[in-house]
Image 1 (cartoon, rainbow, N blue to C red):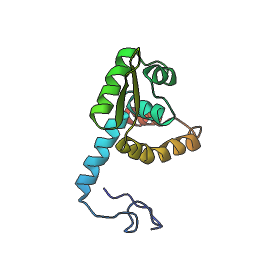
Image 2 (cartoon, rainbow, N blue to C red):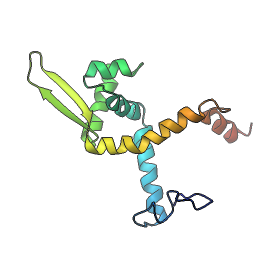
Image 3 (cartoon, rainbow, N blue to C red):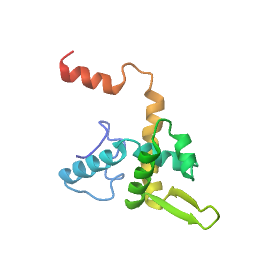
Length: 140
């Protein structure tokens, strides 16, 4: 799966944009893995909260409306185990636990930021994507 623009204007599939060529199947597999990771409930939003300045558990919870403490705790642990968040224990009384995006996590956020920008730009243009996809599947 090579992504390119029809005009050949230096899109992601152009030789200038791609430092190496990999088989299409590998591109598809990697693309799907990344989408599944950031598409899991709360994962992308938690990373975004960290990029926007959340450090403590309570700050993440305030940033992300509707998430339970249990789910936030679970997702923070998952993101840490994936190397996308760093966890720091500050030996104060009481102990403070701080989270921040790792170098790897910031790289992912840098890749996702254009999607956020695209979403803001196209948010109000017609039917939301999930509704139009559902209508297409059911033949409406």
